[in-house]
Image (cartoon, rainbow, N blue to C red; front, top):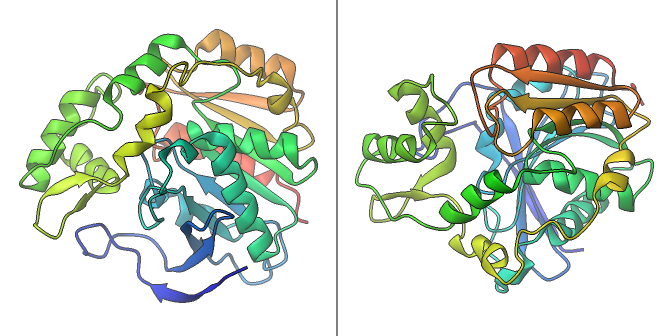
Length: 311
């Protein structure tokens, strides 16, 4: 396995200014098909070095900055590793766009686990990240000791999937962060109806980057949309309920945005009924997906973290 030395860095926004939160280490590893991948590693408290870490995995068009507030918060409990899937953030873009699929993302994360010598871990997965967690649990029984599924599950709503398929990979560049924030707000107003411009600016800096020419663009390879737009792309062709049930054996928290068009309340309630020990927390006033900065989300996540096994 090829390795790249870990370097230290202060948490920063894509504009290069220091943001709130603790220090992290940048870690790079290689996928089996030669893609250089990136993760942020937040050290936990002294004495927790041997505890299973918490892996955070973002949604389809997101990156490590999605956890810039939550990761330092979780690091008060144990080490936190924030994964950037191929084609996002500081992870390299794939040569073959048809590798932008959950199975490949799962293989990339397993390569990280092997690279770091991680036998067991807890996970926080938003949307796509939650699907990847379920696949890992089904493929590697006993490795996942606890899970937060952020607005995702084995049964998803078609309307929400179509909405994502329509916008992903589209859009151009903006001249300033304010322009980008306003454009982002127009697309996502129904998801976060209570957001003010400063909230949109914060979210835009998590999801966008500056080009060398000084333009603001989304921080992902637009080719991640290719598998979704292929014939049958994005259709639920696999029964994911067995993968969801594989999360049993550790605490499971299901976060659902009250306005979500991806995870229906009935589906979330079925998830609780199907898996003993699973808990449902609904985040009021937001859609897909909660940012996990919300007080209701943080309180539920703290309770979940308290239930994680120490070893």
